Length: 105
Image 1 (cartoon, rainbow, N blue to C red):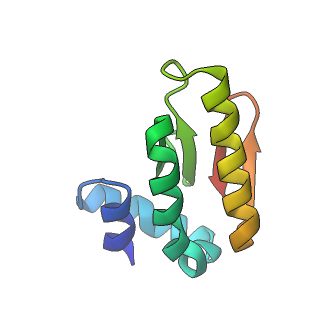
Image 2: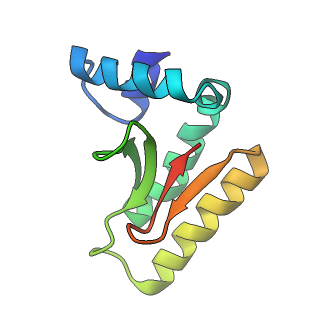
């Protein structure tokens, strides 16, 4: 599962990245159950500069976008797509208003 996640988010399969993902999965077992839905989200948000990655500040998987590269309309669409995706697949997300990004919870 660790290598699948790293592959899906385009991270190299280094020992450090594997350890980070292992820590994330130990803290949040729900990610294992719902990960198969994440590539669908990645496909839907890529054209909006959206991405799924490892958080730099926490052992979490984040969903974000390159906010200096999109218009307000695209930003609104990004949030709508992410929320509808989470609702459809019953995936819990935490939203950080200061950073304007989501975390799989």
